[in-house]
Figure 1: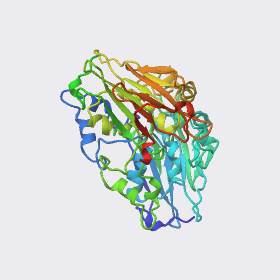
Figure 2: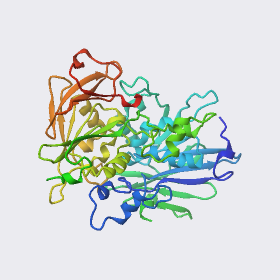
Figure 3: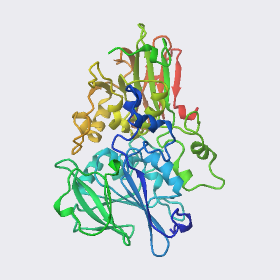
Figure 4: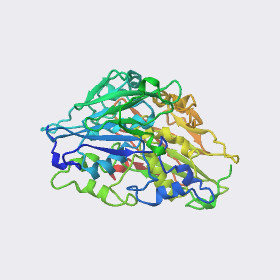
Length: 244
Length: 244
């Protein structure tokens, strides 16, 4: 399978596409709209009164698409997190940027806003020349895997949901990674260094350090850094972009 | 808590608000848009080229809101199914129809397109005069309950997700019902008769018969009727509305 580099929005370079920079509950907050305060909340009012594109107050679950351009000009698409609003993100931003599929997925943690879109993963799976669905690798910790297995047993067992005879089963290659900065892994030929951080005490969420020419540290859900995660090198830091 | 009847779109009468009449994968199908055929699929192209309101090819997960007007003029809002697209449905149709909250929820079955919006149930919970969240009853079979308990343990245990210290815990009163036409139950003072049907062989999905002046049979996911579910009375039949 050879993606057509001319179809990439970035031509011969890599890019980051921020599919969502909102909180778990997203913006606008429906509560503000169903029971408006006096005066109404300006943020949520704007969130629904302008088209979502370019609307700073229409924000979906945090998710990043890495459009990675290899040296030979081919593009690979690596998705970090697939939350509750994944369907909308695909319809809006995949179509806009002409992203044809996802090559691999990486999960930061197992909260609903990071994984609940997995039921729709089949719509972005790559296909081979005969139009058969190809397996998509999903990188995640064992802790996240255990949670996914409870939530989506049919995805782990590669079958449709019970009783859903017409549905297509997703084809997924589950790949366990370690929450350890010393244990990088490779997704679609790009190396990712896990950056474990605390997301509430007692709960570890992964950030990732990646990129060859520019180094990017992507940390989407952090309450406290761990000493071992601090990194001295010069890099682009993307950190809880909701608050920036 | 006394809802303001003047705020209801239907004034002094009951109504049915179809929040979604789409399939599990919704319309438009993102696959048609990411890899367009030649010529492009007319249905999915229209699904994304017009605003969702009034667009017959923009269809979200099947879900019905029963706006039930009591004899004293007060309204109660009963939601049947809360699928993957619940957030969008609230923002679009709850706001449009000025629906302030949901009084009770009924689940037809435990597939993703019927239950995966449960993580967002907190945005439509009723509140008392002191603005405290009130418990919302959710009616479901034991089979569905067991599935929900695996998928959403934090909702069943009434706590935030692990590590999500800032989140608000939903307050839910889980109410087990039988898949038996002889065992009606009452949600927000309206009687519902369960209508078990097959949804794929070996898998039971519930439809419901309800309404005082007009009788409505709502059957959202049916592959085969069961003899005991057939009902001789004159009624309004809503059946797999996707295909009508």
